[in-house]
Structure formats: structure tokens, C-alpha cells
Amino acid sequence: MSNRPPPIRHTFRRTKALKIVPKGEKVMQFALLIYHSPEEFAVRKNDYNDPHLGAWRGYYKALVEAGVYVGANALEVPETGTTVRLREGKRSVQDGPFAETKEQLAGFIILELPSVDAALEWAARCPGASIGAVEVRPLAPEAMRRGFTG
Amino acid sequence: MKGSNQEDTHRTVERVARESYGRLVAYLSSHTRDVASAEDALSNALVAALTTWPRDGVPKNPEAWLLTTARHSLIDVVRHQQVASASEPTLLLLREEPKEASLSAEFPDERLKLLFVCAHPAIDPAMHTPLMLQTVLGLDAVRIAHTFLVSPTTMGQRLVRAKTKIRDGGIQFEVPQERELPQRLDAVLEAIYAAFGIGWDEMAGVDQRGQDLAEEAIWLGRVLLQLLPREAEVRGLVALMLHCEARRRARRAPDGRYIPLSEQDSRQWSLPFIEEAERHLAEAASRGRAGRFQLEAAIQSVHAERARNGRTEWAAITMFYEQLLRISPTLGTRTGYAAAAGEANGPEAGLAVLDGINPDDVSNYQPYWAVRAHLLQRLGKASEAADAFDRAIGLAEDPAVRQFLLQRRG
Image 1: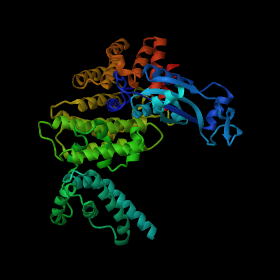
Image 2: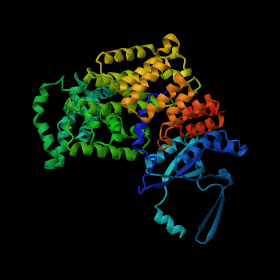
Image 3: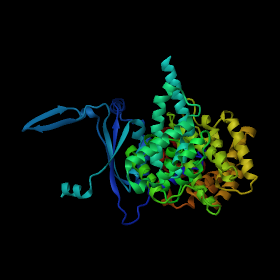
Image 4: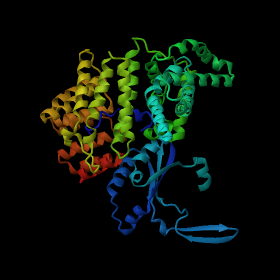
């Protein structure tokens, strides 16, 4: 680490990303939506020896230890998906994922953080960001979510 | 023929914009405090240059041409606004114009004032560097957003807000009084170094952006040095950046692998940069007022000596860190001190320093975990080391650093 210049950058970033949320301060929940390319999915399908396993393990540990982790899960490859629609009373069932894009949803992580800046910082550290892409999206307000779940 | 002429003109406009952008914005906004309008006026002038210069030829003094055109554009804007209160300062400027017309080649360099405005205590510290990059160097909000890991829309809004504050918040375009100068200067130095630090981290990756930013930061440092040649800390900062920059090529193997400082081939370090850094450091030291940046540069200077004698004097580095801790006990300094103490006095000594840091402060701080992992590994504490490695891996952003740590973890 002595290879870096004495890291003022972190002082700078600290002003943006709070690590400890004081009592009473608002926190938001964010979803990190992780997208992979077909090539990346192919690796997963052929054998479950994920070459990025060590990176993911470290990332998970760092999230939990920083106290920001709410939940996460990985998804099966997109071909295993089945998409259902109901239009004018008629069912339509389609093989495969909903969207026909090259990069597909591969998993998600839910984090609790004080700001979108902090969420972007964690997204940049996510192994998925260098493998594919990570979308950061705030969860809907809690009142709305409570409406769903009763 | 015409095409190549146009290309030449494009290049000329680009060069003039690059060299004069900050000077023009600083001068145009120093009276009105309206940085955003000055930038708009200047970009109008640059667009006008792109259409008229190919037709009429590049003017003898392109900078003066841009200044005059930008002023006219600024006056037009004010006329259209028709808001008496807001246009007052600009009308003052308008009245000054006849004087201006005679001074075609020279106009005062107000960049120092602009730098102090960007790093003004009334401005959110997180915006100091983005403001400098935009107003002095002319980088656009999208590019700045990438660098600062913020969405382009958000960065645009934050820049607008900061500039509104400069215009309406009574922030003066002035060089601070002697009494205030050290503290105010420190904010300017921090902002420039933050740009360099981000560039340094990004530079590692494949893309050109980080390298550019590190170069821009050094350029800003040189501008500041030219404006304040007697300030030792400015020299310290330039020396520090040059020492780091000297090692750029050695930080990555040809295949992109990360190479830690201790394993770098010192023959790949840039001697001209090291020598220039040393000159600045010596000049700063002769002024007899040590400061944070001079001490950080001194640490890098000790590292650089390995290029000459093949050794690293860890005891000297530890000593400089001890001085640095007295004036700047940041997390970064304490972690660096732990690493140096670990080399000079053994891993236990390094760990003792790390154990003195509040664990809550480091849950987000990657270098702490990397140093901790390294020290624990040297002590043969395999499982504790693996744990620390995981934290360092999880907090790393650079895939090459991640890969390096994964290998070390085993």
C-alpha cells in the first residue's frame, strides 16, 4: 500500500460517504442490480467454479462488516427464466428472460446507506462492476413498500 | 486543402482554449463573481472562433480575441436578462471595456483568486476539486462526474449550485490576507492533491482518464507555484506529485498486473521527474517551514533513493511519518506510519500502530486492511491474515489490486 500517495483521496471521500449513521439520521435502501454478459453467464453454467469467488467473498465480508448489508442473491442463468404476461384475459408464456438485451440481470444486493454517493462507491467496488455492470437504484419509499406487504 | 486548414484551426482553438481557459474565466468573472456566465460567454467565444478563424485566419493574439468576443457575449446576455440588480456588476464591467480594448496582449492573471474562490470555506469541501477542474481547466461536468463517481446530472447540479453560491454568497475574488493565507492555501493544495489522488488511482486502469487527471493536477500545481513562488508548501505539493508521477510506468507489469512499490523495478522510474521533485523539495526546505506536503514529499524522496543505492531507509521514513502525525494525524498518515513501522521495527510494531486506530473509522478504508493483512501474514497468523485480506479485497475498486491481494491471500 506504500505504493500509493498518502491517500488524501480518502479524506475527501469521507466527506461524502458516512460510515456510521448517527442515531435518528435517515438512511435509504438501495438495490445494486448486477448485470452480466452471455460470456460471463456461460462460465457459470458450465461449472460453478466461479473464478471471481474470492472477490465476491471479500466484497460480502466488507459489506457486512461496514454495517450496510441488508440482503443479496444470485440468479440462475437467463435461459432458465420464463416470462408470463396476461393481456385481455389471454395468457402468454415465453421462454427466457423478459428483456432481449445482451446483458442480463445476474443478481442483486440490497444495502442500507445514507446517500446515493455512498451507494455508488460500493457499486464501484462490486466485483460485478468490472465483470459486467452494476445499476444502483433506490428502493421505493418505505411507506409504499409497507403498503405492499401490509 | 481546406479540410486540413480547418483541422489546423481546430487545433489552434483547442490549444488556446487549453492554455487560456482558466485565465479567461478568472478574468471575466473576477468582477462579476459570476463564474457560470463567464464560462458560457467563453464557450460562445470558442464556438465563434471555430467559425470565423478558418475563414479570416487565426488572429495575431488569439487570447485577446477570445476575451473581447467573450465580453461582448457577456454583455449581450446581461442585456437580455434585463434584471437590473443582477446585471449591475456586469454593467460595471461593461464600463471598463474601453480601457480593456487598449490592453490587447496583456490582462491580469486572476487565476490565483479563482483558485481561492473554488476552495473557499463557504463552499462544500467535496466541491472544491470539481470546481477547479471545471473553471480553471475547463473540464466538462460529465467527465468530472466519471472521475468523482457521481451521476452526470447530479454533478452538473452540484456545480451549478456551487457557482450560484459564489455569485450570490458574497464570496470575494481576492487573495487572502497574510493571517488567513496558510489555512486558505491548505484548502487549495488539498483540492489539487485530491485531483491527483483520484487520477493516481484511476491511472492504474486501462483508460487514459486517470493519467490525464494526474497530469492536470500537476499542471494546476505548477500554475499555483508560478503564482506563489515563495510558499514552501506549494513546492512540497509539486515535489510530492512529481515523485509519485515518476513511478507511473513501474506500477503495472506489461500484462496489467499490479506491482507494489517494494517490488517495482526502480530503473523504470523517471529520473528527470525525481530530479525536479528533489529540486523543489530542497528549495522548500531552504525556507525553513516544514509542512504536511513537504513531509509527504520527503517520504517519497526516501523511497526514490532506492533508484540510487538499492535500499529503502525505513527508519528515515518512520521518522518523517512521526513528524507528519504531529501536524496531520489522518487515517492515511496513521496507516502509512504503521506500514513504515512494520518495515523498520518489525510487524508487531506496525500492528500496534494499527490497533491504536478506532475500528469504526476503518470499516470503509481499504489501505488499513491491506497493511494489516500484510503484517499479520508476516507474523504467520494465517487465519487472521486471511480475514484482513478479505476485507482489503472487498474494499478494493481496482481489479488489478484485487487480483494481487487474492494471490497474496492464497
